[in-house]
Length: 284
View 1 (tube, rainbow, N blue to C red):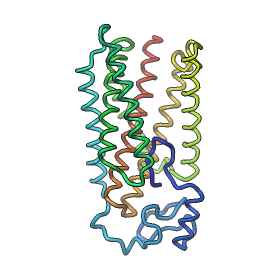
View 2: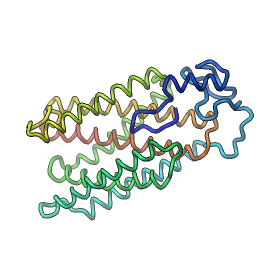
View 3: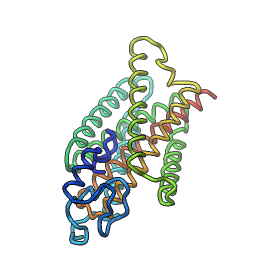
View 4: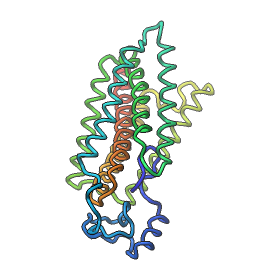
């Protein structure tokens, strides 16, 4: 697994895996000397090189991942708080603030797309994505807390932590096995989820009222729960990425890619938890 999560391309395709096996002379699924047992690919970070011969001087460590992830998440949180405070959502300013938030979301999406197609992580792109994503989240959260469900933001943050902790425990206990089949299933499910979201937006934009019904009621809550489950699955993929990167002695720069993946997944989970809690509170 070599890329980040927003665009569902975490692992090499089957063809890439076959080419890796051909280069290394090892069958698919072979264990690299000194590396973890891996049931779906050979070493994705150093194909053809015996891990026992690699130097650890520039290899990524868990501390590297923690520091880069903390930096990226802190950027999201800081810009979210600042946008909450500096971009008011009262009746006189909500249109302006929301317009800026939508623009920030678009810029964050573009930066994420650029990073996803780059072969190496670029810290400036990742931190820029985090900053603009934070602006969007801050205004959106403030709007929902003001007009729809007061206090729901704190609940959504706690819910995101709870989901993340649950996935981490399940992954460490090996209750979740991240395999090629698991990754393929998650990718297919996420593709269907995003297509439904796009269809819902199109129906809403062209006068179909509530679109496909994902904005309210039981269907909206159920759709949000599916989104949370998908986010949890992506988080398991992120943990696998980090584990493989450290175990295989990936370059230190891979810590930024791990931070990018973890951040985008946590943002996804937060938005879906916020959606579910907002719908639940509004229905009550």
